Image (cartoon, rainbow over all chains, first blue to last red; front, side, top):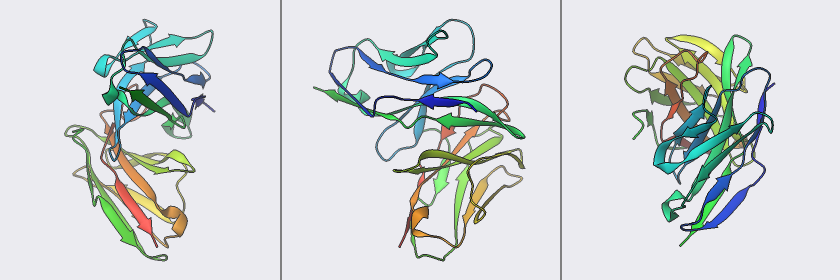
Length: 115
Length: 115
C-alpha cells in the first residue's frame, strides 16, 4: 500500500526566510502527490500536485514543491515565508484500493511563521 | 470558499444516538468523499461516491453509512454513537471518479461532539 510520511510535527521559521516542509512517500508505480493546507477551523485547501512532467511544481500562494524520485520525496517550499502562512500542511498520495482509489494523507506538519 | 457546503457546522449529541451530516459538492463535481479528522487518528478516508454510486471504501465503521442522491448531494449517517466518534467530519468533492489526478475541494467540516 502507498503511504506518505511527514517527519516533522512542527516547523518554525522567521518571516521573510525560506521555508521547507518535508514529505516522503512510498508507492508502487508512478506517484500522484498532493499538498493541502488547513487553516484553523477551516477545511483543507489544495495547494499543488505532481502527476508527471517537470519535477518542480508551482502552486497557490507562492508555494512550490520539488519531486525527487531517487529520494522519494516531495518537499513543499516557499522562498519567503509570511506570518499568514502559519497553518497545518498535509502531504497526500493517491492509493489504489479494491474498486478504486483513495487519497492517503500524512499526519500533517504545523508551520509557525514568526514576525 | 471552496464551493463545497456542509451542514450543520456543529453537532452535539449523546452516546447511542444517530445523526446525519449533509454535503453539497461544488457545481459540476460528480465525486464526493467523506473524511474523519481526529487528534489521535489524523485525517482518515471514509468513503467515496461517484455520480450516485459507491466508488471506494476506507476505514468506515459498520455503524456509519453514506449515500449520494440524484442531485449529487451526499449524506453521512452515524448511528449508535460513541464518545470516540467525536471528530471533525469533512466532505470533499472532485470532478472525476477518483481514478484520476484531480485534486479535491473540501468543505468547512462538521464538528461532532458526542457526550
